[in-house]
Image 1: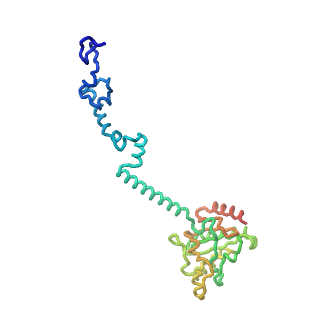
Image 2: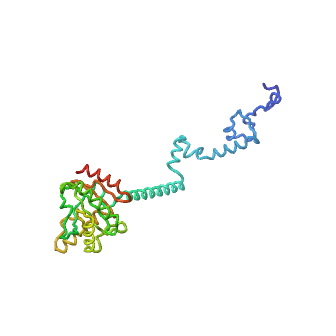
Image 3: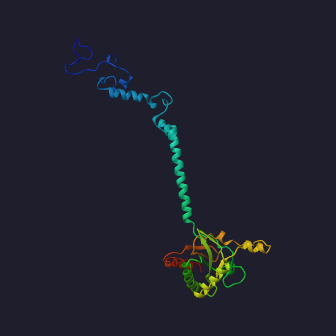
Length: 291
């Protein structure tokens, strides 16, 4: 209780009593904001609170315009949608870097997944070849008709490809069914820097293939590709629709295998390497489903 005749701020001895707001030193909105009317105020003990209140008052959130009519959620949303210009530039740069990285990874993924030769699902199409046994250019794919066909493509300078031909002979003997089952042929090309091209010396290549065929007792055709455009042009005619082997088949590595079913749709594609037993086992499993 107040003692009779006591002045404001004096009461029970030893207990401080708050001054009325109008009599407090430094009374202002900041003080009221921090302490309320009944809170004791001390310049020395509450400087930090006063400074904090002034800082809060200077915040855009406490300004009369444009935020006074907006809720806090709306203000935060507005700040996220309309960041400062320097943050917008940083975000643009981040988006550009991320886009470049994604495109780079996608391109690498496409390159890495591109097979040598025709991919599974693509069609084996007609093209002209020349056989090491002699004769005019012809279409080996056409000659085999609707028989499932296995094509091996290699570089004559690659001894591993010659070894592959021996394994193909075993498959040919097992599944050819007297000319009614699996059809096999092997094509020699010049394969360098990830691209197949016609052999530089056709006559020498054909002679070499003939020796390989005889030495290894191969009974399937060994051929080189012929350019149908050039052959027909020399005859004053137009190409009748034959593909140019190196352009259409896109072989990039020696020892490329492509197997197509009766509809000439590729069902198996591989580049043989290392221990090929697993690869030939996979190929044989596909063959058995297609014969």
